[in-house]
Amino acid sequence: MKNVLITGGAGFIGSNFVRYLLAAEPEVRLVNLDALTYAGSLENLRGLPDDSRHTFVRGDICDAALVERLLREHEIDAIVHFAAESHVDRSILGPAPFVQTNVVGTFTLLEAARQAWGGKFEGRRFHHVSTDEVFGSLGPDDPPFCETTPYDPRSPYSASKAASDHLVRAYFHTYGLPVTLTNCSNNYGPYQFPEKLIPLMILNALEGKPLPVYGDGRQIRDWLYVEDHCEAIRLVLRRGRVGETYNIGGGNQPYNLDIVRQICALLDEFHPAGASHARLITHVPDRPGHDRRYAMDTRKIQDELGWRPRHNLTSGLRATVEWYLGHPEWVQAIRQQNDYQTWLQKNYSKREDFAP
Ligand code: NAD
Ligand code: TYD
Image 1: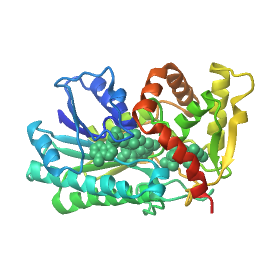
Image 2: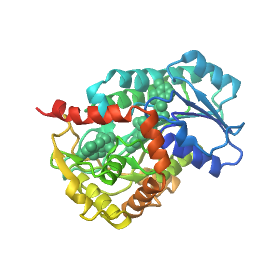
Image 3: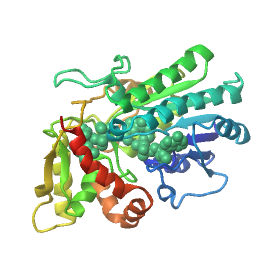
Image 4: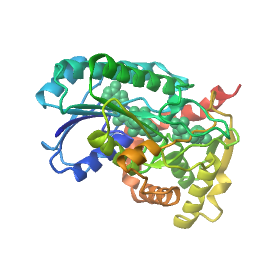
């Protein structure tokens, strides 16, 4: 599998994966298909080769003719599918693009692969990148999600990802398409768009803006440093069993409020501002349908493929805060080229929309 189509490779995890795979596999040739929505940016690909090893194509995964042409022209033998609308808050405010990209887009890719590969599936692979959010919300004493936990998505985002997962499995069972899936917990690290919790808090704190914590801040996520996710995806792509799903997670359970406090402490160390940044923590109305707790049982990928996260939350958060502090030009460019300011305004008015 030398010629790999990456979808969504100008987004957060996709761009990290492109860097990771190019470094890990000198022989690989990547075609990076991304629509460059608000969440995607060529800034995330700065410094990467734009040659036969990495060809960027701006386009929509819902464009069946384009996708099929790319698969044939570049003799693609593996697809790693990241492209998605990925932010729960946006899915609450406007679910339509989530159904379009996550459901119709995934269907379009599956169908294009089935057509272009014409039933010759030997040595080919369709890898689908999904989320732990499809499993729903855990109570405080529930065991972590495993690969056989029944789906119970509760936001338009997670419902659209669940639908796409089902389509991917249906193409395996019905047509024999050689698929693998990974369901991963919350990622953080370099190049994450600053609408998500960790970069939003870092950048707001640096500007002395409020740090909006939803509800009581005692929701729990299982955080994973993005490079560890990239390593897990590569292992599944290369050595995972066809038709199988692998859960990926960081094995930690902090409250959101603890994460925000840790970010404040790191900024107090790296970027002292007189008083602690923690003074900016502000509780705001909760997200509707807010999942309380996620946790992942990762024994399958550990036992079968020997994967383990290399970063813990302390080292990963430190590296992330340092990265954002060290890349002001990236922050500036992202803010200028995307609708970031519009988003921030919406983000604040949204809190009233969220209120009962
Ligand atoms: P992101 O929002 O940062 O990036 C998504 C990318 O997809 C962007 O570059 C965007 O331009 C592109 N895109 C969107 N619609 C497209 C379309 N119709 N055609 C082509 N490109 C399109 O997302 P992310 O956080 O990097 O997530 C990547 C994948 O990983 C998603 O499938 C997401 O569900 C999954 N995932 C994310 C997390 C997380 O914590 N971020 C955790 C688990 C799984
Ligand atoms: P987020 O990064 O949006 O990821 P997800 O909703 O996919 O888990 O949010 C992570 C957690 O942080 C989630 O419980 C919601 C919470 N959160 C806040 O408290 N304030 C914020 O401003 C944001 C963006 C998220």
